[in-house]
Length: 95
Image (cartoon, rainbow, N blue to C red):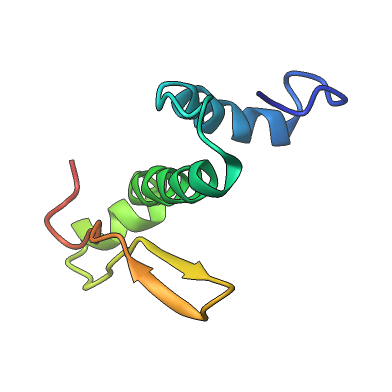
């Protein structure tokens, strides 16, 4: 699902489309929002870590032997705690 009031090719809809397509595969339709939302947030972080790792800046840093790491964390506003999703990527990960 994207933003219906925007054109399909709007930047926000292009950015949201892969995530919303992935989320539909998770079978969360019958889950209450309070259970489904944390799953969606964590999946978004996982996807964004992979996306960041595919950027030219990060790939060049790794090729240039820079010690750059990308970590997948979720911040819980209610508790003020960070949850480490254990999806860190660093040098040697370049494909």
